[in-house]
Length: 390
Image (cartoon, rainbow, N blue to C red; front, side, top):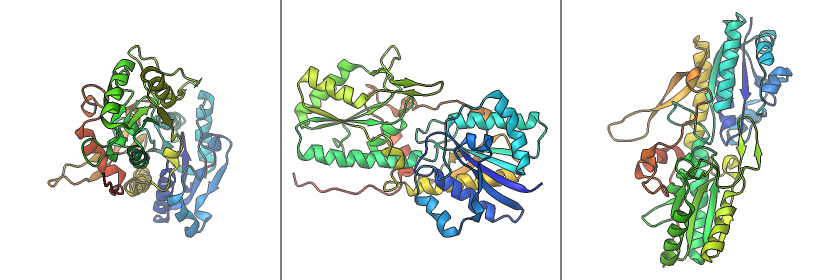
């Protein structure tokens, strides 16, 4: 049996998803015993429909573009694999002489990863090694310190909020509400705090799904800030919920795993206008936050590559039924260092990691310095400085 590798993408893409793919390809080239590195076209359906492409046949110049290509060069999906299909997958892997299967994705993909591993064991195909590669801008995979994709999404939002803040500061006549991605976890919204250079800088308010959203407190905070500053910048997660755990804006679409919320930023901006009589507008970067190569974090890109390389190395060493993870090292001088670890796949299957209480302030309208210290190394170089003559 040839020692072929198969990489499959699952869920929403990121700025560095292709960097993990590049890492796998490059690591595969280091081992003569590897026959081919395949990519499944279109996610899990690509495996089931046997739509595989040998990525080793492309020249290095073209492969290197993966590092600056957002999305997924081989396609992704949210395809719900049935129990019957799980039983077919080991046979397909055997047919193409796949020994190392590397699913790259978030919580749902890690669940799929675990089930494929179990199906291979049940089918008696113990030679097939299944190792998950974490990916999600939401940073909500359990156990691992952070997830490739988050650092770039965080850098994008922090930079965008910092730019918006300059506009609002120049003409301080309104409230601007910026909506951040993150259905159940507020990691991305929280990262906007890195836009600040000094006390009093925007964002002035940050709301995450981990705390109940109270409209009266929100309006009270906005009004006070408006009378003091003139212009106010608010960052709100798309997944904001009330005390009864219902979303502040009714979902417009639901699937078995996902909830697609309505326009939270527009709702809050309209609330400010109607209740306070203050001009307000909303901004919703949306997919720009996970597709911007211009604001890609070099730290994130490097770690995404490392995750791909480490996943293949672990598989080749005989590890299976695990996910690659990151563990932050304690250093004498406080500098950022991390190491790769392996995490049993059952510990991350469909388990969400949310912001800990210590990262959210008492009123629930901002994050703490502890969060900022944790997050800062992940976004890469310091954001551009702006001048102000006032």
